[in-house]
Image 1 (tube, rainbow, N blue to C red):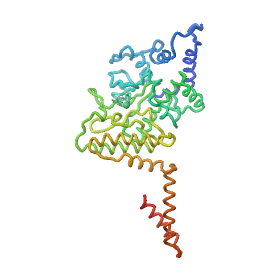
Image 2 (cartoon, helix red, strand yellow):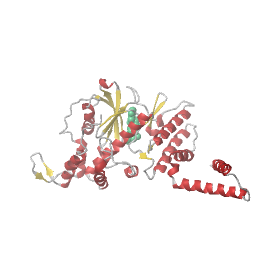
Image 3 (cartoon, helix red, strand yellow):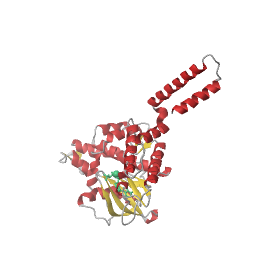
Image 4 (spheres, rainbow, N blue to C red):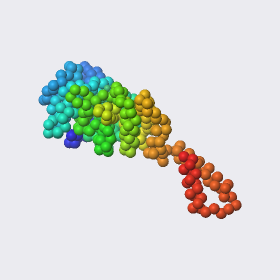
Length: 364
Ligand SMILES: Nc1ncnc2c1ncn2[C@@H]1O[C@H](COP(=O)(O)OP(=O)(O)OP(=O)(O)O)[C@@H](O)[C@H]1O
Ligand SMILES: [Mg+2]
């Protein structure tokens, strides 16, 4: 699915194609130089809006608007060429950063209906507080692999916000969503099954039926008594993500689908690494707080700080300097107490260590 044969030098291709043009050295087909009439923004928009050089060989039941058509079809073309989809049936939801479409899977895949999340070109320039999420995670190429030797060049381009850098950031953002889905789906998380990816779209299992897509949890009237089990299921998924060093980063009832009593967590481009992102703990706390706020409205009370702390202790406490210092001072206190009690007598070291362990346990 992942165009494994696309060379990593694709970035050089983008760099050449767009930075040179943006810089004024435009080569026409005949090779003659001329001054660019387009602004950088227009050139950027061309990346997905201009389909003049793309051979669009598939026709869709869904009729996109004139503005949508270029980026939609060029984004899905490679998924069509790979034999994954045969048609686009309808728009599921148009959003600020991406639109999701209902697609018909190729019969050979045996998959029926699929959802294609197509990123907006505008997102190149408008990633949601992107830097906070990018911190501590690698740049991923369009094959979903870390950028390797080229990482430095690409990171510089992203920092300098060159057109090439924006494209690389965009691809990396999308690939983080895709690779997170791959890992989590394999691990048994309640997430859509990833089926394929292109430079600008992610193809995954569709949740819902022909009539309607699964609604997001914030719009659902839950049955009495249903909320508790769903709350536990969300926490099971958060726990599973942490086992893979991942934090959702935008978890809320808006990013959880509900269908026939089951939930599915979606929308992962901003996933952060538990161990390398400096804000990981704050981001985890926010995810838990939003989850608790939603379930509190349905009568399930959870203490967000306590839950987040518990997760943090389970997965990263041993790396956390504050926790280590707290443990150390408790140990010192326990030792001091013991010294006072055994002064004058020669206590057994085995008994002493058992007593320390007991006291540490009881002060936790
Ligand atoms: N696999 C899926 N099956 C069915 N519907 C889906 C699926 N994935 C996403 N959707 C629908 O598309 C919407 C947008 O998806 P997602 O949350 O991943 O994108 P987004 O970037 O948050 O977009 P927005 O800017 O609209 O919030 C979801 O709220 C949901 O209604
Ligand atoms: Mg969303």
